[in-house]
Amino acid sequence: MNEVAHPWVERTSSARETLDRHAPSQGSGSIVDDVDRALGYAVEDDLRLQRALTDLEPEQSRAELKAALRARPDPVAADTPSIVALRQRHEAIADLENRLDELRHQVDRLLIDLDTMVAQSVVTSVSAASSRDQLESQLQRVIDEAAALEAAHEEIAHL
Image (tube, rainbow, N blue to C red; front, side, top):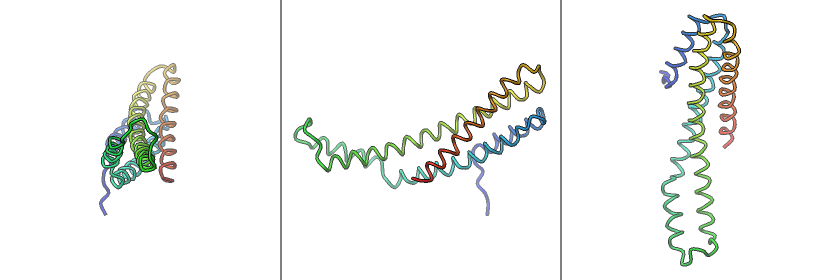
């Protein structure tokens, strides 16, 4: 069975190679492994959320809510039970759309943090020890972003 190459594989492979070449003693390879794992979860979650949204037909949901709101004889009257249900469906779908957007933003942040960590690792390996504090801070950011993606995966898995 052929595995599909994920869009970040080249980026994380490059990060790993750069770290091995320029900063092998920093132990950052395991962090890249954590990033790979978190990104793998993110792809699974992204696909799961996309499938759910496809099944829920967000455009149709919005259109039905708008039509029901326009059809009301009095726009300031209390919502009918049908409109309440349509609003609830719309809000649930919007929540899934927001989760998908946030997941994608987390992936972007993680990849940027990884690139920054790699650059700081290389700089630290060839410069004064004063850069080590910056590197430690960036390493922690990468670890935190990877952990946040894994936590999001756990949350999405229970949807």
